Length: 247
Length: 380
Image (cartoon, rainbow over all chains, first blue to last red; front, side, top):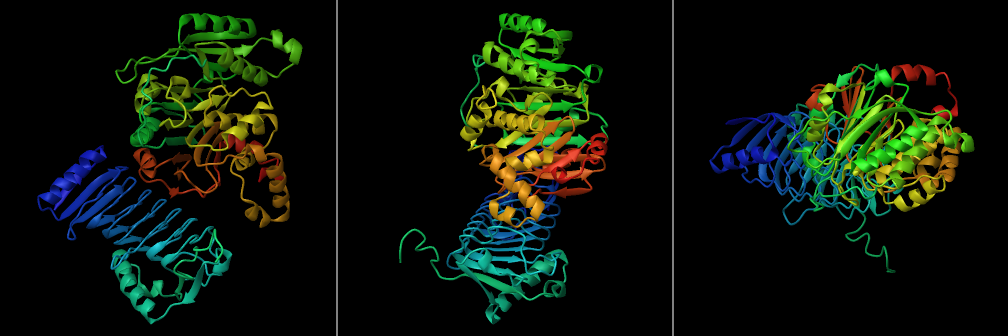
């Protein structure tokens, strides 16, 4: 294991040390005193590499990452998992805006809240399946232009109402699946996606990922399953095919 | 003013501005080292073409006088402006702004400050009977427009802007901010987008006690500019920060709209949100929306607005720029990045991301006691 004291260190130097370490066979990194360094873990490969971070990592954490696991013990900032390809990012606190932008594989687990534009332009391809699970609440433009993958919004601290206090929920969604624990009236947001009860296949999928999520944060599965899940999917493969033209 | 030289590289680098603010509600003063430390965490958000700070409470000995900070290209501009000042103002004290030569700040203009008040027998008063504040605004506009090589970059009471071309932490060293004490600080790290990086163009942009630091791009600039010109504002700088400052001056000082509400004018709720409001509030916002439609800012922004009564930080209505806030006892912090706050306050009582268009407003405790008596609709 390699321990790095990142106090006062520029991101270039920090990421240089990480990359060199991975090349030299280091599998586990512990980075202390991180505060605002951008691009941590960007583009790195190695399914068995684990990087644990104490402090507040800067923007674009794990962008283009391809395999490793990042564990953040505090809050994260904006653009976590930007265009991420594979691996896992676990955030024990809150995360900022634009989480998982254009994400095409791997998993992002957030224990607390996330900001605006979570999962914007997220996409899946063949066996690539990006998954984001948020324990708390999110801001507006959630899953905007979502094209693939799965986002699970738990809202564990949320009230019991069937309202979502955000705007532009899944606007422009044309692929992928959103799971939430509220039976919302989706027609308030758009006519291009629909709310369904989950089926057995969905339940099996959720069980696998939610077990992993609950183990990552010591949140009990019972707590998560206190409310039933519903899924939101686009009403057709190309709901916007005739947005600007007649059928 | 517009002839102030620009010798700085205008090449672009992909980045985004950074901002910070620190306020103590009980007016406990701190020196400039915390704000410098906070903004330096956001170093990579700028490109060295502008850094600056506003501090409030730094001139207690001259609290009743307008503190003019003026930059000059040459000494003849200085003597011209000083002649104007002598004719219209009582100059209690004037001196060079203390600086510290550092290799990282080069080619700076002459920097001078004046503690002044308008003469009672000034020429303009005979014609217009202007209030002191209005006269000062007119004078600032006049100097900035008509005196080549001179630019007033601070004109408030018991506050000051300290800014220039360079990274903010270097600008802080240059102006010796560790020797300055204030109860509210704002800071900016600039990445110029539409105007070149030059000394006057750095943030904060100030007028009287108003100061603005801003990250973003105001696409409604043309509409806002034409609207302000109807009220005789001269938009010499051509930056969107200037527009924001003047809109707030118009709304708050001239039209007497409460600060929080004035900020809402900049980022009006959408009509579908207004429709859902309760009756009184709905009427108020509909009226404001109709009267001040041209003051609405469109486009992405995050701003920190400082004034003698406190500080307000706010995003555009769909949150296209970052903004994080934190509180710790009597201190409130705002910044583009949480890390900037953590650099000076490792474990705040509370950290949160303000919602789009919802101002984080902190008033000084002594002001709060006064305003809470007013009540009514406008205190929303």
